[in-house]
Length: 149
Image (cartoon, rainbow, N blue to C red; front, side):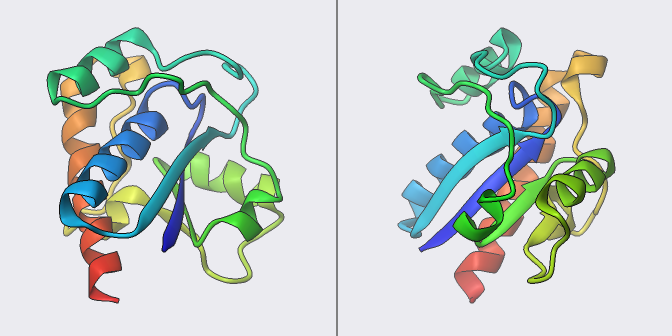
């Protein structure tokens, strides 16, 4: 089983979208994947998925009930096979919190696609559809890589 932790700034938009998209894709593919998500900041700890992100997931038949924001911890490095950030700022903060990446587990989601870039941040853009497209493309690419191994 591959254990993946998706990470963004607050754990209320992008990373929970990735968590639940990956859970759905893995279930449909019969892949053995465990997914969670977390934040680099403490700003939203304990809060549920942001309502527009929740609505975007629901629009695609994906629920996210019971998810509450949490912060990544150094112990997560040992618990997960991959720790996947949404953008370069997340990546810097993840490496700081984790104390580095000696095993090469830390990656960016869209590095698993032909078009590496940051995942669009809907907190600032308000464009949850663009974030959905980025997350869906990244999760499909990541699942493809896992399946090939």
